[in-house]
Image (cartoon, rainbow, N blue to C red; front, top):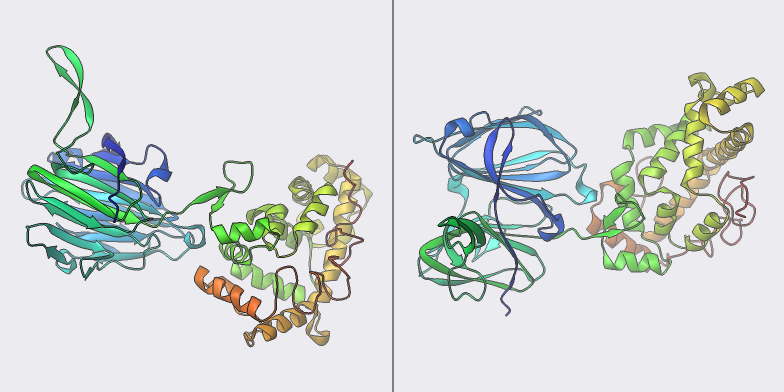
Length: 521
């Protein structure tokens, strides 16, 4: 057993939020990786009603979960879905903002004018950021309390602890959230998951989390006889303690005892997948290793598709393609979806057996800048021109080129690309024999033993699967003989009758429907 050392300690910072509520920010101004997956925490504690009654009027949240824990006073809340309620002393609310929600929180003090509570923000992984918003309102009486022989009391708000289960469940960060009180002078050890992020926030009394030998506080500047001195403040009040790795946390309570929140959660580790600050992805060691080895990452590809592709739009476009209809509006939508999923390079990196194709595309001078120019060209067309490209003659092309900053040859390449893609879509969605795509996907599903899906496509709805189900699906595919680098019956990663890694409409190593692009010099 190893006691977690302290890697960071700091004092909560006074700030103002909402419509002028004075509070203290525990963390959220600095590096979020230190408390990952938790983004921010506020301590709203005040005995002066004028400092908090204006509250937190209507404001949006998206892609996160918020945890509000009230110790004194009340908080009235409502949201854009019509939910409303009141949190009293000891109550808790866990809100999953997901795809987005508007809500308000209006605090009111107790009979003595006191207001005290905490709000913690937890990040959602990319695969869950667009999940449906929901609330969990927990009453104080429903939160179990465990009291040890030495008088140590623990309120188990979330997670499993000392044989008790907290009432909050289904949280992405899989957290443990405890409200712990240790009597004066007592030394206490608490188990924690070795690799979870963990922090304590002291809000009453004092204590030591270091070598558990003496009470501690943080160094603060205080004036003494006209001089500014750095001294050790032993109050412990409003002190954040962030722990390093280990499987135990030990605290030695001071003369007044100590009360603190102990929170742990599963971190969302990120890895850079490009040169831009925004090009970050969740870190999964096995998936990254598969990409490096050219084996692709189907699970991440499906997760990105589920996150970025509008199911209704995709269904409508599939119906159009099945009828052989594919105009420039559809092409623009496809390009935008590809960009949202990481661009051509990002998608190719996640497709099994496509590492070589990715290099050939790069060598041909085809990058995401080409698609940005194509979107500029399409945006410079009228609605009628996008719906019926056949009307584009010389005078119209000249106008479009001037509006998009390109030339006529770029427009001709785009139109040729569109024609070939339209022909390919017609072949893939054609009714004769079920269409190329239908036959291919049906064969894949049959080989994996998945059976049919509504609509006759033969594949399950991957967008409704969680990451664990997708991992299981990938293993099932391998067990069925579908190795990285190819689909069943296609040989070496190609499509039927194309030989090697060619795709429809390509001469040696091109990309579907993109002929005539200049070679990289």
